[in-house]
Image: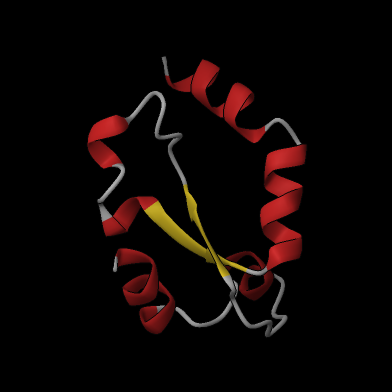
Length: 72
């Protein structure tokens, strides 16, 4: 599965690493929302390894609404 492959390539949370914090990634996030970018759903470059906390922050922050309005 692609999720397992991504976590094996990047086993640490990519958001935490930006802050020099080492946290095990347990979730895989689509950088571009699948609803708008269906063709990228299986593109490993569109995936990001995240810990549960960072993944929840991204979705609760309205990330997709703001990000997709900028890209259109």
